[in-house]
Length: 73
Image 1 (cartoon, rainbow, N blue to C red):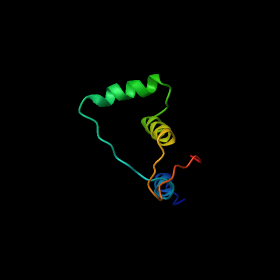
Image 2: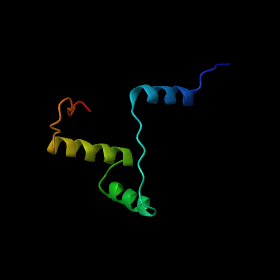
Image 3: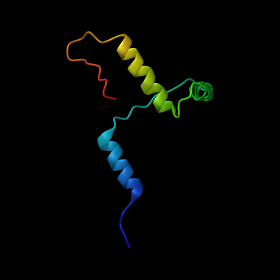
């Protein structure tokens, strides 16, 4: 029998490949926000938030030294 644990494998991969961020919404806003990103054609809240951040960073580049916007995402 194999000792392979697919959940552990996925979690270990995610730890090495992604940074995790938690956000909070006022009570009752989650379903409203979910309906909005779905209507806009996004597959997930994560995709929607990442797209908003990338667009904002492209439109308003940081001017502080050492801060860059990566277009490789």
